[in-house]
Amino acid sequence: MNVKFAVYSMIGGLVITLLTGLFTNMPVMLLGAAHYGYPFAWLIRLVIAPEHFPWRVNILNLVMDIVIWSIVVFIIIFGVAWVRKSK
Image (cartoon, rainbow, N blue to C red):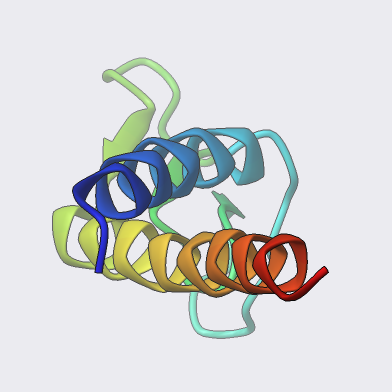
């Protein structure tokens, strides 16, 4: 395995995770809050009590999203490199 593949996949996973924070992901577990992030909701904006700081970050879900998206990006990078090498 090339170290560049791992570094690029981590950077790509982080970027994709942060971009998924722009899209709402509404589970039914908590009404009164908007959830953001895919596949796990890692960013939560409280709607009912906005006088306090309304943004919350679930660190465990954030780390799991980064790992999942990094694996996806690694598979894509590895596949593209394998196709280029086989030509």
